Image 1 (cartoon, helix red, strand yellow):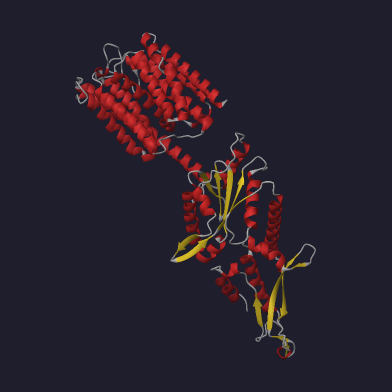
Image 2 (spheres, rainbow, N blue to C red):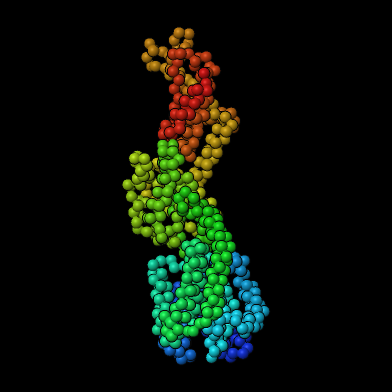
Length: 604
């Protein structure tokens, strides 16, 4: 259905354009005949927008046959005309996108009517202006057909057609593209497409040289129409000033090519006409610069904001928002495609942060993101969705590259080097189908995260998940519940410290000596339950380790233990030695020793 709707829209636009150009030529019946070109061109270029260069080649061949048969044009003339039209109009589809407001893109049919009404009002005025003396240099007028150049005006003085051609063809192609891609700017994406367009442009220039009958108006008007969309693109990619200088030199070069006879017999141009043409060229250049400055800065800022909204600033990968939007789209899609979601988690992320600091952690994320991009692109979309969490979406089941399968199942870890130190990264990964069985992207990601968390530390290999496995999700919910309890206990001081003597089994080395003084003491941690009972550390500490909360817990223990020793006379005895158990996560934390020293300074 989308294709049929867009095809109907293309035909309606082409018919409207045909009627518009015909009605704009009340004194030239040949204008109606020439405007028939737009009917096949509008449909052909719209289809080419969707189906690429193959359809464009078909349109090229069809138009070439059209010009050589129905119009009886010479070979090189037909070749020049065909390449000029296709090249210029097709490039205008995306080049002039930079100069058309976004509001017009949201309502292409209304915009079409707006341009139509605009042209109806201005067509008589422009025809009148063209007939005024000295408005257009006489050297640019063909006395046989009364053809003039006025900015981008074409054959038969088609003022109305020129006003309507670019926006209407563009809006038609844009509407067609929105149904399939949603892209805002289309440009050659790879080397093959660049070669294709370069070849087409070279063919156009070659046919211009080989066309024996040189026309100044045709050379300037049509080749400028080709170059202005290219200018818009270069302004977007290379900068406004560079592009404005380029268009001035190009305009002047094309004029010199024809006026001084480099392309054939020179056309006589008076000094007054020469000045008028230079004024025209400078005006176009300044207009290009002013329009580009106003519009491109806004569009570039919009592009930057869109990029920032969907990309992770550290790794350059797509972010969680982009992942959820993509998953929502895939879960609603009923086209039969079965994409898969891959979920990766770096076990040692927090350990890496504490061992190497923030700079080392950031470099790890950047390099690991590049590593994933190298392995999984271009068949997968890659996302960074958490501190040490990544995700990727393959287009369909079984589409994961062989190199990715090999790496994800390879027991050798990814090796990271920072400040002449080596660190081994062992990501845990899982793969699950993206289906409508899940209520939301959050449900899907929660299941993937729960499955990865169940894997033992250091366990490696890409495992597949059954979306019907609720046991994984229940386990995840229990873990998250305990994480909330531990965080709340830290905030509300819902932990309690106890201590007990460490007693030797040898009676001669009893712990209580000399008036019940203790020589060795172990400080213990308990979590206060809602009913006031005390929960053993063996119950809640595994969850604290899973969510990297042990450094926070150990900091609480150190701080409270020092205050306990300070206020308890039995623990303050000189011969009493107190022992506190610390986790490996805290030992590997570079900032933890400094924290202990700071707490010692703050206590007596």
